[in-house]
Length: 417
Ligand code: PA5
Image 1 (cartoon, rainbow, N blue to C red):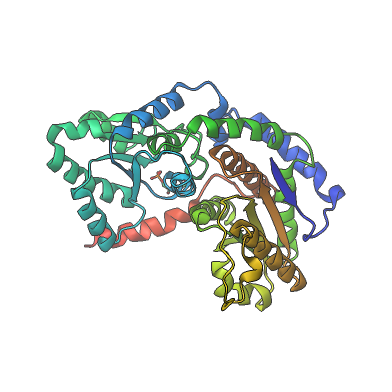
Image 2: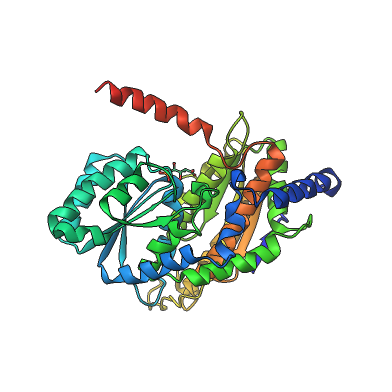
C-alpha cells in the first residue's frame, strides 16, 4: 500500500538501532492498555466501538443541514480539516459543507464567517478535549448566539459537543444546556485524535466514508505494529534520527497537490508538538510544489544545508490534457495529449534529482491511490513513526508543556484588560 524509497537518503546502520527500536516496541505494547499513557489511539479505532458508530450515524443525520460549523483548534481541528480539504471535491456526492472556526482570534475572520452564516442553514460541532481552550470558546459563544437568534430553542438540536466524557467546562455546559455529546477518550491526546469522534462526526456529515478510514487503520496496523526492524514506520523514525545526527534539523514535508496543504499542517503539528521539547527535535515545515519551487525552491536547492525532504506522492489519473495548436506560440506542442498528472510526476522526479545533486537528502512516500482508506493508512504510519522517533529521542510524544507557557502569558494580559 505504501512504497517508501530511501535510496536518496543516508544508509541505515541496523546494528546501531535495532535493539533500541525493539525494546521501545515491547515497552509500548506493554503500556498501550494503561489509561495514563496516552496510547489509546493504537487500539481505539479498530475495536468494536459504540461511540464511533454513534458519531458516524449522527454525522449522517446531520447531512440534512447545509453547513456544519466545526469549532476547534490544534488536534481538535487539523486532522478533520486535512481530510475535508483532500476529499470534499473528490467524493461523488458532497453533503454538508464544513466551515472551520475557533482556530484563530481574528476579528475580521470571525466577522466574515458570522456574516456568511446569517444566510445559511447551519449546525455546530464544538470540539475541545479540555473544554477550556480560548479560541474555540470565543467562537462557540459567538456562533451559538447567532444559532439561537435564528432557530430559538430548536438551536439545541443543532449543537454537538465533542469533549472529554467526564470532565471540563464544556462537558458541564453541554449537560446543563441539554446538548448532545460525543466522547473523546481520555487516553488519546489531541494530535492523535483524528480517528475518533473528533474526525468521524464532521467528516461523516460531509459525506466522507469513515468506515473506509477505519479499514485503512486496520490494514495499517497489520504492517506498522509489527515487531520488526524493517517495519517501515520504524525505518522512517530511524531515518529522522540519522538526519538529526547529521545536523539536518529541518524536515520539509512536500506535496504536489494544494489539497494536501492541511495534511501537511497536521503533520507539522504531529511532529512539532510531539518532538520539539528539551531543546531537541526536528523543525517541521512544508511546501506545496510546484508552487513553492517558485518561491522557496532556490533556498532549498542552494541555501543553508540543514534540511531534508519527505515527499508524499500518489499517481493520479484526472485525464486532463491539452491539444496541439497550429501555431506553437508557447512551445508546448510536444506535451499535447500528455496527461497533466504525468507532467506533474515528471516535475516531482526532476526536482528530486536536482535536490539530490544539490546534496539535499529525501525520502519518497508513495500511496497507491488517494482515498479515505489510503490517507488513514498513511496517517497511522506517521503516528506510529512519530511516537517511535520521540521515544528514540527520549522525549514524551504525548505532552506539550511548552504550550502552557504562552497560554499563561496570554491569560495574564487578558486578566488585566
Ligand atoms: O495536540 C494537542 O493536544 C493540542 O494541539 C490540542 O489538540 C489543542 O491545544 C486543542 O485542545 P482542546 O481540544 O483541549 O481544546
